[in-house]
Amino acid sequence: MNSEHEGVSSNRVQLIISAKSSGPGGFTSKLAGLPREEMQQRFTLALDSAAAEVFEMMVGTPLGPSDQASLPRVADYTAMIGLAGDLCGVLSFRWSNDSATQIAGKMLGTDEIASAECVRDALGEICNMVAGSFKAQLSDVAEQCMLSVPMVVSGKDYQLYPLVDGLRIQVSRSFEGALIWMTLDLHNG
Amino acid sequence: MNALRVLIVDDSAVMRKIVDRSLRQAGLEIKEVFEASNGVEALARMQQTKVDLILSDINMPTMDGLELVRQLQAVENAQGVPIVMVTTEAGEAHVVQALSSGARGYIRKPFSSDQIKERIIPLLQGQK
Image (cartoon, rainbow over all chains, first blue to last red; front, side, top):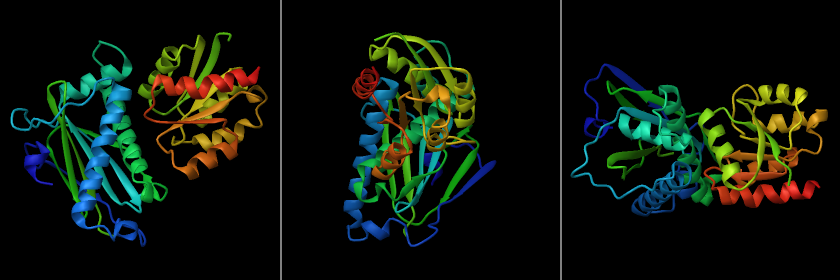
């Protein structure tokens, strides 16, 4: 994952996420017949649709179109969740502090500034629900794909190295005038 | 329908709040809400309290929602109380497992208050 997409300022902390398949899984087992472009398109649509559904229903604010040209990439918070089984990899989300605080406030239904603990809780739940909705849309892998417990990192001083060797899907959207983006890194089987 | 006493079980405090709010937005009159962050806390609560409805997540630390549903079968206060699983794990296998463990309904996260209404009101009306 390169630093342009990380919004990081230094390499002080390095997170190395191992996402190797434990068996004959990997996305190749059931999706091997699909051309890479088709797989990329299918996963991108599913991820985009899952995020849209979660934001509309649980945050109460629809995601807007991505405007990468004018919106800065600021990643004060990163939430990650692992996928294992027929789909194996890591799904990560990045938000600015303002976006994260707004999301938590909207989920809690309050105008008050949410505590750091509530912000982390809210982001972890968003990550979990988007991952769940994403895999539910891929009916051919949903039953044999498990999710890990989500993890939330706050701060910018880190590099993330998902040890995967397959597809990378990136989807960005705007939320209340700020950019949020999701990255799905999949192991190749 | 009488005002309800509800137990909401989820390891996320934010999600417990959302479930609480969604129940009210669905038009249900809530008398009291009890919260638990895992199955063990929920079991302890149910030893002391009678509720009309239990909504539980599945993936939780210490004791998950499926084990909670199984153990509630032996709790007197839980007899006849509808248990609805509210979870991201909505694959057919999970639904079958939850229903065969004793849950009466299943709601996939994310959910709307309309979905809460559709799934829960019939269960509560069926109790009478």
